[in-house]
Amino acid sequence: MFKTIANLRIGERAFIEKLCLENIPLELLEMGCLPGKEVQLIQKAPLDCPLYIRVNGSHLAIRRETAEKITVVK
Amino acid sequence: MSNDKVVKVALVGNPNTGKTSLFNQLTGLKQKVGNYPGITVEKKQGVCKLSDNIIAEITDLPGTYSINPTSMDETMVLDTLLNEKGKSFPDVIIVVVEIENIKRNLLLFTQIKDLKIPTILVINMIDQMKRKGISIDVKKLEEKLKTKIVLVSARKNIGKLKQWNIQFD
Image (cartoon, rainbow over all chains, first blue to last red; front, side, top):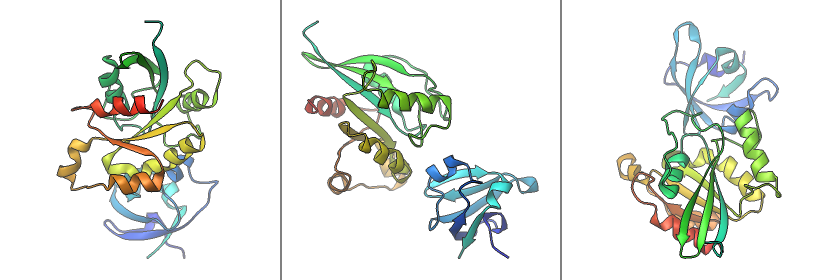
């Protein structure tokens, strides 16, 4: 079972392992959400959507379905 | 007046870096600024006197994370920067980044550099430097990026930026 950003606990940090280019909005990549970068889950809205993350020095809110497509490793 | 040399300048950068504030300072215009991205959605133009006989025609472009257009205003940025025969095609590009997010702006910065148009990197909001505990080795950064860097605070002073624009001739 892969671990994705959607599986992170609040405050937990991990490194982005893989993301499928077809499924991820281009803007996310442009903002630095790339393999090897550290990501931290800052907060989750009720029903787990959106997820508020910190990556590459920026704070972003992403949909849960997007977060589920980005795998992470510790 | 008609003997004045005109330098065309374009302001680019991520949303919310203070491009429009800088534009207002340089041109004396009062374009709308806001604390959230998406305020500048069309290009705004103004003039600024750089010296006795040099005038800058400044175009304030909408903020974008990369030249790859994903919206109408980003498409306009692309068109302006690629159309050499266009009226707003710049002689100099100023990439405005803000102190806390220099890294994120590097994608756009490298794309701009690839256009091979003279470029200045302006790091804005330096009045926040102390408060945020950030320090910058300007010389080293200039070496690495091979670009002139000017630190400004659009809210406070912009004198130096004018000088660098003149240098570009």
